[in-house]
Image 1 (cartoon, each protein chain N blue to C red):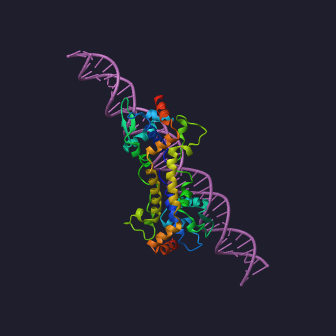
Image 2 (cartoon, rainbow over the protein chains, first blue to last red):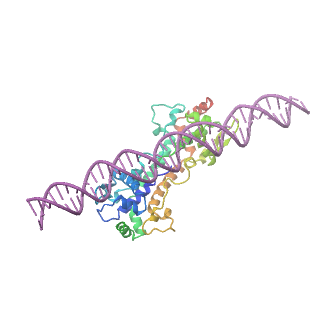
Image 3 (cartoon, rainbow over the protein chains, first blue to last red):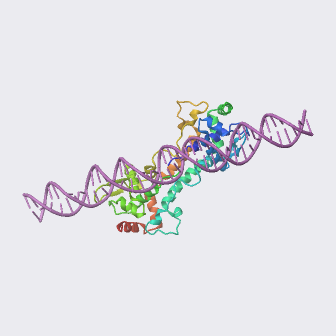
Length: 159
Length: 159
DNA sequence: GCACGCATACTCGGATATCCGGTGTCCGAGTGCGTTGGG
DNA sequence: CCCAACGCACTCGGACACCGGATATCCGAGTATGCGTGC
């Protein structure tokens, strides 16, 4: 079980977008160059963020990506599910149906004890990720490295 | 991000092992037939449980697998990590190192805010899974379906 | 009758193929900008 | 000088290869059993 590395890229890119001058669109090209990532592949991840309503995209010259809403309204979970999808990591195959007393008309994803235990785990995971917004991360970074906003803008300008 | 289906097999198989007569070993063959699973592949998962110290194996005639310790001392997390491995789903690639002010001598897996957020999420997940033991699941099932122990033993006997 | 040794069948264990989703790349559709020509 | 229309360069968007890990399988190593033989 390993998460797509696109999640890390997406989170950092969204964070960087909180520091650009308000309203300015950033090309996928520059977002990729920021961390020396493959541009075409990062573009694919950004598209997923657009479909999820986290970013908005503009085509043509002076186009690019920008945050679709306030950083305080974007949770870490939003970004993760945009990339990884909404389905749980643990997919109950309902193997109990093949066991003794297994019924075809029972939804074992709800009744199976094993499935329930795993679901509780993922629920805790989601709850924790949903409790943190991009604004929280932004504030944490700025508290630790105050020059980050300026450095970020400068780096984008030089790419 | 999807978990190996072996996790579901392992959890159900361990649960079944809590219901066999004390001290009896069950062949991988029978554990697989219980839910109509591919025997050779389930065997591979059971080996992982043996390496993790959750099961003990005996070769030769009358051999098979049995629980290595009390069901109350086996957590759901133990089984999951035995199959999936101990490393986190989110692997911080430390892309900050390529950004402005990135240092080669800093461990960004500890200092990066994004990495920290993801780590907190997985910690909550682990904590939840570690809070539930096989004994808990066993009790839950027996409370809901009292005839399960008997049915399980009978099914193993008929395979 | 009993004990020992051996052959045997049985089970786990790891090495070996196959398949699928993530990774990486490319070219086409659509659009805003700059230019240029005319009024 | 101002405006409009055109061409163009630019960017996103989705379609197309490639690779590593999960899935699935098989055969060999090791062992407890059961039998046969000798005492």
